[in-house]
Amino acid sequence: MSMPSKRADTAVIDTTRLTYTVNEVAHLLNLSRGIAYQYVREGVIPAERVGRRWLIPRKRLHAWLDGRAVA
Image (cartoon, rainbow, N blue to C red; front, side):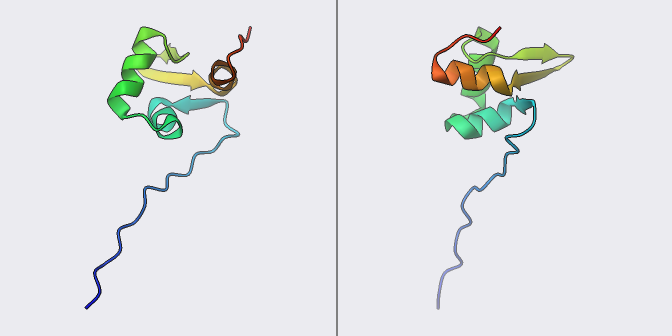
């Protein structure tokens, strides 16, 4: 008798959008959700607060990952 296979965590992230959510960035960077929120609050990951939500601008995230500044 075979065991049911486990599904891999395969989130689909639309990389053409202008912003990412914290959950999406956590997935992209292989971080836990809690650590991603901590880095956003501390300013380690560039993000903007919009109401009660944190949004990470795609261009700023990729520039940060590449080690360059974006105006």
